[in-house]
Amino acid sequence: MNLQLINNITNKYGIIVTELIENTKASENYVRTIFKQVGGFVWHTVVPYQYRRSGLYLETEKDVAEYLVDIRPYFTKEAMDEWRQKEWLSWQNRNADVTIEFFKVLLSLKEETEFPANDNPARRIQDIKDFGYTIASIPNSSGRKTSRIMLPIPLYEMMGYETFTQKFKNRVIKLLSGINAYEARETTHRGLIPDHKFSEVRWDEDTKDVNDDNMTDEEIINKFQLLDNQRNQQKREVCRKCFQSGIRGSIYGIDFFYYGDKRWDKKIPKVGKAAEKGCYGCPWYDIEAWRKALNDKIAEK
Image (cartoon, rainbow, N blue to C red):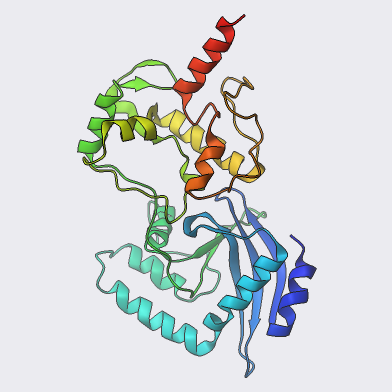
C-alpha cells in the first residue's frame, strides 16, 4: 500500500494519510488519518481498511482513498457530538455494567491506553466490538500498551464468533462419536470443542449461522469436527497466518494437500462464504478427510 498514491486522491478532500499500521495478531490493517473539515475543525484518527469483523477488505490505494472520502462526513464536530450522545444513550438500556465503563473511555474517540481495572480487559473490548462498533487496536513496538480508538461510523451488524448451547455442543459430540479429529481416536468428551471447519478469520457479516437443534445431522457433519482446546487454538493461529500470508498450513510438517497446494488460490475471495472453497484440501480444514486422502495416496504405492 503506497501512502503517496492514497494522498494524491484524498488531499483535495482535506484528508491526509500519514502512516500504515499493521496489526498482525488481529489480521487487521489501518491508516493513520487526518480529517480536515470546512471551518477549520481537524480530527486525527486511525481508520481500518482491512477489518475482518465487518468484512471490510480494501486492497488498492484507490479503494482506500474512496473509502476515506465516503466516511469523511462522520468526522465533523457536529456529527461526532451527535454520535457520542446517541450511542451513550443506547448503552443505558444494556445490562453491561462492567463493559460500559470501557465504552465510556472509548467515547473520547481518541487513542486510549488506560482502561478500568479488570481481569480480562480484552474481553470487554471484544464485547463492544460484538455490538457492532469499529475499534482499531494499534500495537506499540516499544513494549508499551496497545492503544485503542473507536470510530464514530455506523455500526455493522452484530456478529462475533458463533457460540453453542450446552445442548447443541453435546449433540455435536455425540453425532461425531467423540472422535478428536487430530488424534483420530475417541477422547474424553469434557475436553472436546466443536470446531468450525471453515475458519472464523474468513467470515464476514453474512457468514455467521445460528447453531440450533434445527440443524440436520448432515449439516453438522459437514460443518464441524471435534478438537481439544490446544489444537483448536493451534488451528486458529494457522488460519490467521494463512489469511495474512496466503500460505496454507500443514500438519506434522507434511506438505500434502488433497485439493490444490500450499498457496491460497488468488482467484478465490479472502473473506465471505465463497472463501471456504479456498480451504478445501488444507489438512486443518477437514483433518479426517486429509488423513484419508493421505492414506489412500500411500496405499497406491
